[in-house]
Amino acid sequence: MRILVEGTVERLVLLLGADDDPGPAETWARGVTLAVTDEAAVDHSGPIGVVGAWGAGLEALAFAARHPGLVDRLVLVATPIPDEVEGLKFKLSEVTAKTLLLFGAKDPDAGARHGTWWQKNLPAARLEMNPDGDHDLLTPMWKRVLSHLAPRAKR
Image (cartoon, rainbow, N blue to C red; front, side, top):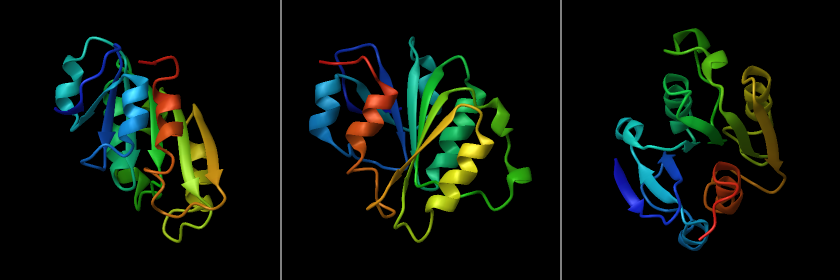
């Protein structure tokens, strides 16, 4: 696990699909530890919030399915519907984390149809459509991502 920001609260946010902090000011204000990569995160002692952006949303889902006792909150950002659901190495019903789905109405690659599909297929998912959003929602929606993943965390 590579830590991007060392936090002051006992909350780890695992970022999949990006290599840099999408909103340094917001991350700092929450006081969370922000890290990239995944499997080393299982050594973390407290609950983990995971965000998967774009194609890495499937990786975030798989991590949450493998570690339901660790991952309590999940965010998928503009994650397209998988080509073959049967080919996934986990069942969507195994993802028990409280999930926020963020999609842009103006996204030509993963818009409303994709968000609605995820909402119907994930048991604990809430869909939020950004009416002016396109495919790059991670940076403009980072504050919302963190408010879901670390709701009570503040520096």
